[in-house]
Amino acid sequence: MLSHRSIRTRGGVVFGLAIAMCVGAQTHAGEVTLFPAADSTIYYRTFAPASLLSSGSGEAIFAGKTYVHGDFVHRSFVRFDLSSIPCGSRVVSASLTIAVANAQSAVPETQIALHCALASWGEGASASFGGQGVPSGPGDANWYERSHPGVLWTTPGGDFASVASASANAPLPPERVVWSSSPALVADVQGWLTQPAANFGWMLKGDEQTMGSTRRMHSREAALQSDRPMLRVRFIAPGEGCSPADIADDAGVPLFTPSTCSNIPVNTGVNEGDYNAFFSADGFFLQAGIGAGAIGLHCDIADDAGNALPPFNSGGTGANNGVNEGDYNCFFNSLFLPCA
Image (cartoon, rainbow, N blue to C red):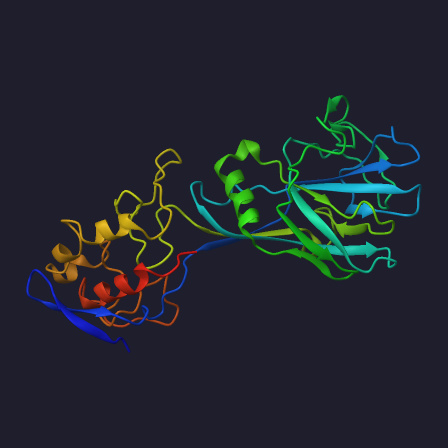
């Protein structure tokens, strides 16, 4: 039940300013689970440092350092196609999961970091089952080339951000490495969504000092889809609010679904724009006077009892006769809540 104190509006109608939160309010976001568009492993061999070794199409990717097969260092790259997320969306969470296929048990736990890749890289037809790699073929990335033959990295070993976006424990198989959502991962995905041409994915870097730390992880070529790397992204599409009070863009224009990616409004959440839209000349007080004719307008955010309308209510709603006290209460209950 909503508790409230009464205030008087311009039209003499008494409404309640709710103290409790809007019943049923929840974050509204779309969600996608993505599998890699490309992944690849590059190899550095201590005893033969000039070797050009790759695995672009193998069933596994590697990260870390091995103590067999000539002491190899492994790094891998993974990239996801974000085109299924509506352009202009606001990313609210991003997490990556990769299944461990094999490990050298001498190091039962090790960390693998995600670094934002800063240049494009190739995924050729080379395929190595184990940690030794195979000679690079056309289009393969290796330790010295981002695409074989002849397209060099600026720095051998790959071009990537020096500061990791995330780091996670890599357990023994059959467990999974999980990089949980963080502001840095969200920023990476948001950046790629905003500028697709800069989407070079992440570089996976393990412990390259401890022998036996390497992890063999399932790649996008894994036989079972459930074993393949998965990126889960939650987002708020343009034209959609992130809470019942998010009814307008930052300029105070009621939200709409843009017809093209060139007319996307700037909406950073609940702020002054929403307040102004609610109390604009064609806002709450006008809509409250037209009864059922206001159903579906931008101030119609709740039922008559103040329960948020879908998609912010999974528990059901009651009668909705237009814009009234329920919408007023719900708006103010949601106005100061975090919108994430």
